[in-house]
Image (tube, rainbow, N blue to C red; front, side):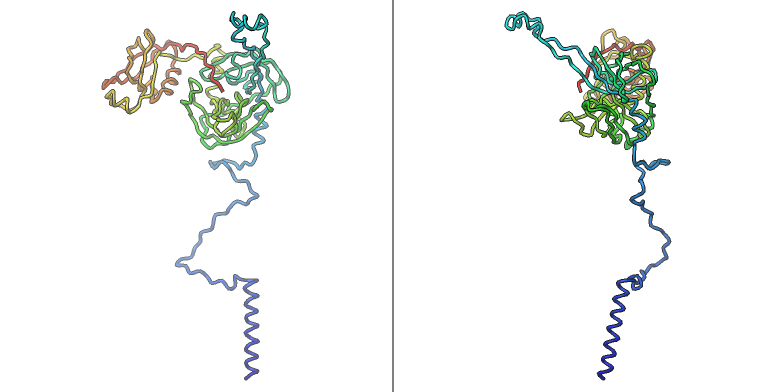
Length: 395
């Protein structure tokens, strides 16, 4: 009996040891098959290996991108630094007799430091035309441009358009690199963009981000606004620089930032290259930008105003003032009228009305759709040329 018990205990010990070895080295031998009502043939999606690049753009045909060095190399030679020197401001009391009485004749010779502004620009043609911001070179009497290869040249102002904050310069140098224009109609929110410029005068700098929004307006920066918003870092000195796509094509001219500290908070604005190019062509050809004008003071129509005026519409632009003997006045437009259409373009806010009127050809007749109380009217307006305005927004 004792011998039998000894054999049994040894057999159990060996079995437990074998079970332990199998469970450690080959646990799948002990796994029980899962019960299933039907055989499964679906395969799990193959996850990308950490070593494989993941495409940032999921549109059809998009390629995986881990570096934008090619785009930077293509665009940076055409982005320049601009130094604008402005005449020193005269002391406000220089011609004041009382000021001279207290401070003597030397007050006339008080030295005044010349003002210097730093910004950026973009070479858009091999014959030397540059686009920058008007506020970068406004009132400057000496403008110097420095290329990324170290060459410098004096720039001549071809023309400015304060209402879009665009200026066109020209330099005389050989072998100038020109940037390629991108297609603003194909831009989408989320597209990768690079901002290139000379922030704080430290030298040419490239930052990256995405397009955060399109068609930003009513910001109070320019008269005509249709900004690209981006989170690519834009700082003072970047004004006039390039906003380019992932292939190095020009999409916009960096213009302004929203900031509480003077530095980038991830909200920057750029003028679309389509607008900048249109302004540039007008300045080069005619020395000015030709826009339509009808002489009205508009205001957005709110539901409260529409209810007060007993209007059957909820959208449009309320006319609060009409210039006497102006185009709109001559056509019969009155204060209190609501404009709903300019030519064939519907308008629902002031920005749209200004843009639609500006697109009209001076000396041409345009039909304006108006709601006057419960009456719908179509007025024929002889469009005039928009008077040139001097606007210098602060940055």
